[in-house]
Amino acid sequence: MVSRHPISFLIAAFTLSSHFALAAPRPTVPEIVLEKSWVLKSDGLTQGEERAILTIGSHLSDNEYKVSVGDALSVTATRTMSGPLRVELPIQDLGPGDYTVNVKSKPSSSIVATTTLHVSYPLYVVVSTDWDDTRTDNTVLNWMEDLHQRFPKLRITQFFAPYHYTDPEITEARRQEIDTFIKRQRNVYGDELGVHIHGWCHFVNTTGVNCKTKETFGTDDGTGYTTILAAYSEEEMTKILQTSIEVYAKHGLGRPTSFRAGGWTASDTVFRALINTGFNADSSAVPAHRLISWLGYPLYDWNMARWAGITETSQPYYPFPSLLEVPDNGVLVDYISAKDMIQVYDQNQPEGKPLNRSTVYQIGFHPVDSFTHDRFVRMQKAIDHVEQHAYYRDMGPAVYVTLGELTQVFRN
Image (tube, rainbow, N blue to C red):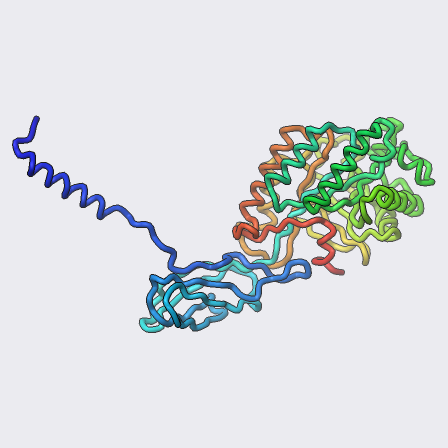
């Protein structure tokens, strides 16, 4: 039907549209903003903040405010010029926890804005690799490079291996390619080069030690790969480790100080050999119940006995006065799903709350042919979850570190 009163219709339509335009919500301007809503406590590696910076928006026009941080502290802020008001809050003595920050107008004594400050110790994230051998193609190396590109703050603890230089199945050209690759990870991304030892005979026989193969955690294939490192005496392991240090020096890899045993098979004799050769950190302890795919093999039984009591929330400790043990509490991606790696993170930062002590979460992978695309995706998902709690993004206390750096935090 056509209206007989077109002018009246237009007026009504204009009035109606104006009503909705007036009723539409306007963008809100933050009343107060913390420069960082998450602040960390000092612990020897992390330098904690001494003050939090709060900005009171210029549209809050009072000249004087009282700013309180829970019941712990309060300061008076006075506006001396137009524009936003910057307030420094001395927080260095605050204990860990969530604090409500109230901004109260001094003239009216009313609260005009609130926000939350989270004070926490760091949650240190270690991502590590076990170079069981270096018979791998460039796809795997490219995926590792991709992890660094996707997560620019990520630093990996590379448990590299001296037997890379003695493996007869690797050509000299390929040996040089991997040598160049691992140095790039160190030089460009800040990765740590630690040592990983499986008892490959082609390496052990260069150390002055006779290779052992019968003391196996799997099946003795004569190569020494599955030899339980605990089968070697302290003197023998000292020679093996000293040769490793010399190989690293010869090839420009630096002086390693962190170690992980192949198959996690580090005994006290291995620990003493590490101390003898100047290593100060090990990461062989593991929640062995996660190695369920090895059920029925000596590896499972050996680790269940050796690492009884190690769980997904186990934290660094000193088995000997000068050697820090950092449990591999998130295991390696071979043995755990992305969902479970995420769950382990959440166990170490319960409910996403501030931490009362410095805490470690470690996950990792083998950069060899077993590192399939599915496992690469699992790693991405786990690190994506870390990013949702990353300190550099002001979303939580998670900080990427290398394993060796943790000796600055956990002191005997």
